[in-house]
Image (cartoon, rainbow, N blue to C red; front, side, top):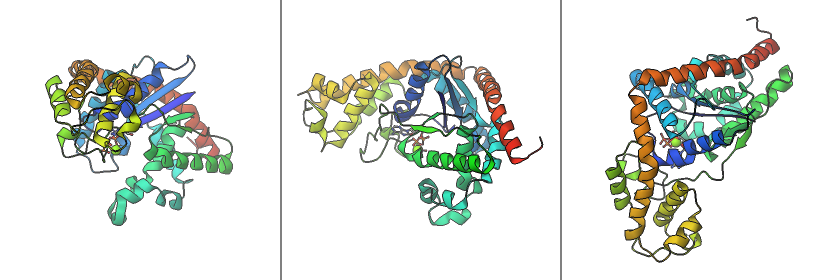
Amino acid sequence: MRVVSGIQPTGNLHLGNYLGATKQWVAMQDSMAADDECLFFLADLHALSQPVVPADLNAHTTEMAATLLACGIDPTRAILFNQARVPAHSALHWILGGTARMGWLSRMTQWKDKAGKKGETQSVGLFTYPVLQAADVLLYQATHVPVGEDQKQHLELARDIAVKFNSDYGDTFVLPEPFISKAAPRIMSLRDASVKMSKSDPSDASRINLVDSDELIAGKFRKAKSDADGLPGELAGLAERPEAKNLVMIYAALAGSTPDAVLAAFAGQGFGAFKPALADLAVATLSPIRERLTALLGDRAAVNGVLADGAARAGVLAAPTLAKVQAAVGLQV
Ligand code: ATP
Ligand code: MG
């Protein structure tokens, strides 16, 4: 089993990213067998599909790496690196650009959503983004790719590219399978449970950031939207109460429990009791992460050293596939 997954090195992570993505990565790393391999990368090349502030991209790469380490990614067990340090991603991306069809990319809903009516003024990189994603996973002959629902279509595209390449040039790529963790919850905004918790939400009160102080975390939960009713004994009773349901889901995800088990413990109690318990649980999980993060950011060179070491290991795994691809298409290198 070979797992490959990436995340863009944007600013601060929030509780939704942690419970929905990084915690799942750590769980995957921890359940690996001896001959399995987990590769986690910072998608700094993907970030260039939108305008960037160079100093920010550079700093965020280190900060995101530190965050992943603070969340429990262990570089002795998983390979942690940034894409740009492994030039084979770019090399394979270009070659796969000859295999991917314009029509396939035009049908990507993420492209359609982001480009809207302004497709002509978008970067070429935003359009070919899924080809780079295909290169990211095919380069390592990934068998399992953890993705959210929103990325499933891009993984199917990666499979289509692999199938066409294999048929045009001979068997080269393993077809990667999507791995959608049933445990990965979708955390909603603390202010409006109809939208997900997101780092681009203008309201900081809508999310818990991994860098928030204990007091801030408690305050945000205290002010989180809820209602005046008592909690029911099981999740089905929260169908019409999205804010209440979100807080219970967060509790269950943090506790590694199920919403029904949480409700069994809190049945009949109101948010006056539930919110402080939730805040305590969140602080108990997040404050050690925040402390590790602060310590790691005290030595940015060491964090970058972890990325460089990871890139060297990733490069070794990537080299045979890239060489095979270059030979298959007739390139002299
Ligand atoms: P943006 O608003 O800029 O899109 P984001 O908060 O959605 O930012 P991403 O960088 O898009 O964060 O996502 C990083 C990872 O976190 C992805 O794997 C994504 O599925 C996951 N994720 C993001 N938001 C949530 C959420 N609210 N609940 C669960 N998982 C989430
Ligand atoms: Mg997002």
